[in-house]
Length: 174
Image 1 (spheres, rainbow, N blue to C red):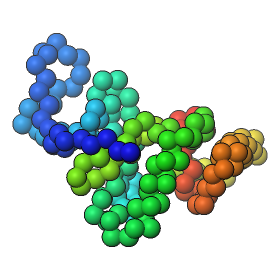
Image 2 (tube, one colour):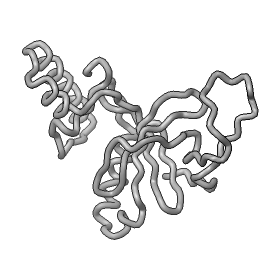
Image 3 (cartoon, rainbow, N blue to C red):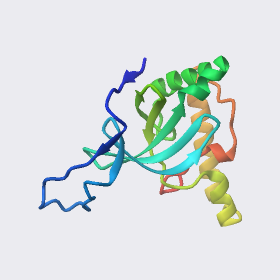
Image 4 (cartoon, rainbow, N blue to C red):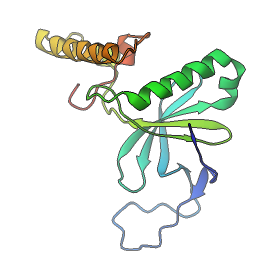
């Protein structure tokens, strides 16, 4: 079940604390915000929307925000079913090598899936950048993949789109 957010997505930030060490943003500059998250630059895109870098307002923690267009999803009931299935799976999986779901928010236009941010590249980009992986590095990544697949299979979940562009790396290349 989604949480309905009724506040305007474009809010203006007013910082009355002159002693703040944060970079001040002029009051006239609109900030896109959803819930407790400031929406930043786009970092990816997909069939139904985009992924942006977000920042949690209270903790300043970076997050990935998947923004899904409800109008596009409504066009095909099967797609809506797949998104709902993805959300329900994300709610139950807890594994150190799976990006953690933090929150689901909804407005009349969009669904916002707030997740752990993996600051590295996807595995495809990483391999292209390095040209080749050492045997030790390749084994480490492969072992993590096997551990994730074993965990998912033990939860009776099958990942049906395993490919290196869907594998995100964190700053330690995990």
